[in-house]
Image (cartoon, rainbow, N blue to C red; front, side):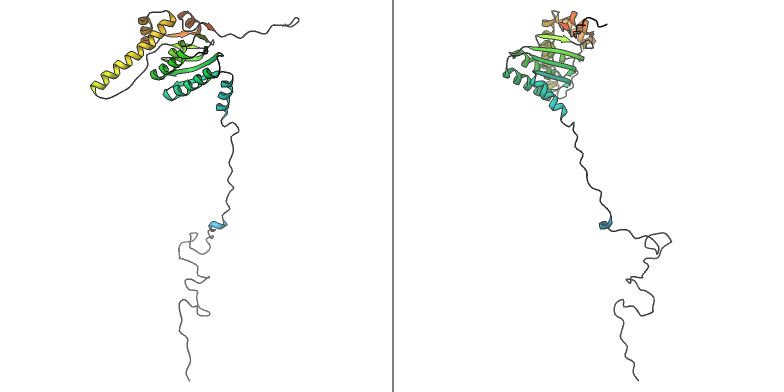
Length: 248
């Protein structure tokens, strides 16, 4: 009597036999307890099963407030200058001043707050102020120092808040190159400094050498002292409201 037998193909499981690799019951790669690929270790959820948090974009309601404020000030012919006046800032300031000058002949108020300036940038703005037809009133608050004083004295009307301070200092410059280039650049800087100091001397009525010496020693002035020095003409004051009869 002959018994027919069918050979095993692939991973076919023998009924009643132990599971083989690939079978659903196969426990995985042996390892120590409580490690992956070990019976009892929790299965890692597939990416599709991981909940995705919704993306929220919070809009800043105050974004652009500075630009909006500056636009409102420009509508009232007020220009605000604060921080360091470099070449880029000088270009923007010059554009604002020229725009206001073209719009009308009404006075322009130039607010200078904690202002410092590069020498070339200050001379650029000074040239714009020299050709403006509209009268410009510069008002200083905080500290103003160095070449930015040239911007101040280029305005025909100048005042200061009580907290203002003025510092005459020499500009700090760094440059490199060949000996010939350095010599030429030094001569150019000297001419620019002479332009600044001569303008300060002309407005304040002081000698150029005195201005140069004060800048070399970093002389500092209060608002009241700046009036006596000739940098500003008056100090800003707020008028007290008149008291009605019967008020204490």
